Image (cartoon, one colour):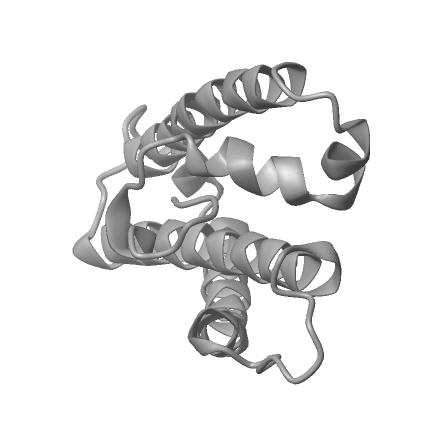
Length: 155
């Protein structure tokens, strides 16, 4: 076939849907992890506190819905690539992978530098291990996207 495979609307929306489901699944997992760490060792680790607050319920619900959607869409895409090997090099796939790497670096570098800054200005190294300082460091990064109402990592 030709060197450039034509991208159909189906290909475009499947790849965008798969990446969106992946981003929100990872964001929900990170929010859920930090919320549980906060509940176990943070300032809200008190008897009688609601273990299923709004942020935990939202993260669990998002994981239950979005991760299976991601798995189903990627299986459909893999089957399509097996049937049409030239679709492995379509521009949508390449650009979404590049944007994912760029977005990850954009998110991780400021968060890591802020975590180091917040950790070095305090002498509580135990907080870093237990997650308290991680939560402070992550909240230094400005929130973006639909997870902006949470205080933890956002995608």
